[in-house]
Length: 150
Image 1 (cartoon, rainbow, N blue to C red):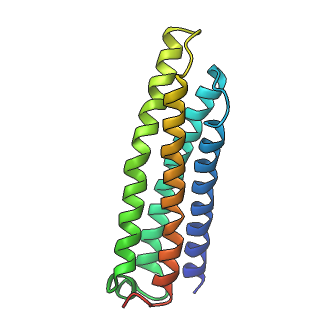
Image 2: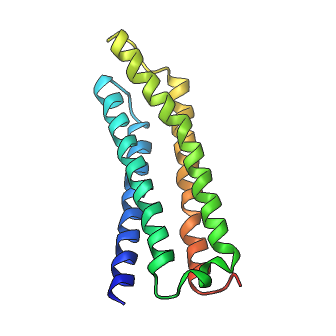
Image 3: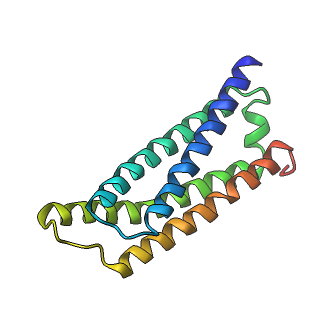
């Protein structure tokens, strides 16, 4: 029981951390982006990736070591819906990540370079879509944890 509780706590903490970094990206993209903000955005995005890896690892650990056992989860559709949503959010996050890298490189070549406002708006929109899709994952988790998807 202690292992199950510990892994569950770590999984929840990782999820909250992931949402924190994703929200930080959305907030940073809302304001004017100077060179420091672009560099910060890159670091936040890297931490977001790390949090996503920890969410995935602790989720797999819950599947393997959880009190209900893997069969409970794998025999119903919500686990697959959660996985699909997680993969979708991860795939979507590649677009802003590549833009952040491009922005940092542009600033490295020309310190007076500015992020194009239209591109910044697009990246914020993508990040906000990620937030909203990611917010569906806990809803599916509730269905899954109650055994409603059987």
